[in-house]
Image (tube, helix red, strand yellow):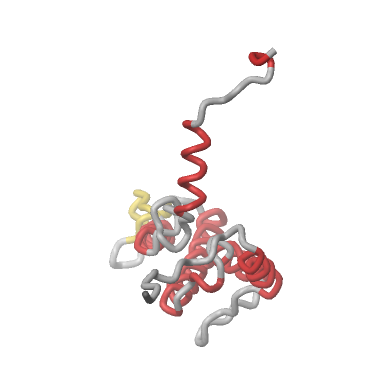
Length: 161
C-alpha cells in the first residue's frame, strides 16, 4: 500500500529550522524593489517588523505592505517633530490672511492621526500584532505540548517518601 500521508511542516525546534532562523537573523530580509531606507532608524524599524516571522513565512505582498508600514512610521515621526516644534494648536487665519484670534488644530496633527489609523489598519490586515492566531507564526505542535504541560498533574518527589 502506498503511503498517502500529507507532508508535514518541519517543527520550529528542528535543527534545520533553527539554522534557517539564525541565517535569516544574520542576513536580514532585503527591502522590496521600489523602496529604499537610508536612515538607521528606518532600517531598524524594517528589521523589527521582519523579525516577527521567519523569512520563509513572508510573502512578497507582505513585504511590500511592511515597507509601507516603515514609510508610515517615518512620516508619523516627521509629523510629530513638526508638532513638537510648532505646537499642537496654531492660530486660525481667515481668507484674507489675517489672524482671527482663535486657534485650530495643527494640520500636521490631522495628517499624523490619519497616518496612524492607516498604519494600524495595515498592521491589522497583516495580523502583525496577532501572532497567536496567525497560521504562519503559530506552531500548533508546540502550543499543544504547552497546553498539555499546563494540564499535566505535577508529581512531587517529597510525596513518594
